[in-house]
Image (cartoon, rainbow, N blue to C red):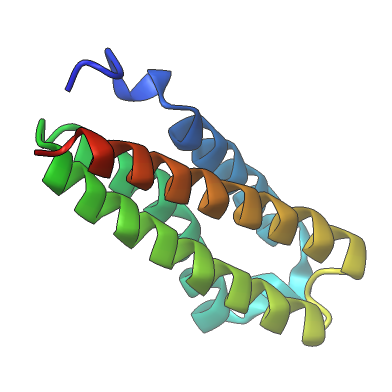
Amino acid sequence: MSYFKSVEDIEIWNLGINLCVDLYEEIEKSTPFKQDFALKDQVKRSSISIPSNVAEGFERYSNNEFIRFLYISKGSCGELRTQLLISKRLGYIDVKEYDEFNKRCVTISKKLSKLILFLKKKTF
């Protein structure tokens, strides 16, 4: 795959890393969130899955494999958006934080869709 030289060149991977780090920091600030071990763990797993699957797919050196892992990453975005909404409704994060994180998830998901379409066109 010659579209990217390294995973660090992939914008979506960088956006996912930043989202994950920011969410980890937010979770550690929120006392109620810290005490809900199940939801806290799920949010962390979903957020870390986004850039991790981009990286794993990239390292497979096959467009079809890369696409498969991008779909998994996209699914993790959907999971995370659901968990963020639950977190907001439980009062673990406020509306402003929810809106910011949700918007970032939507952006990543849209960019994943565009990259998937691009790679599908390049697959024979």
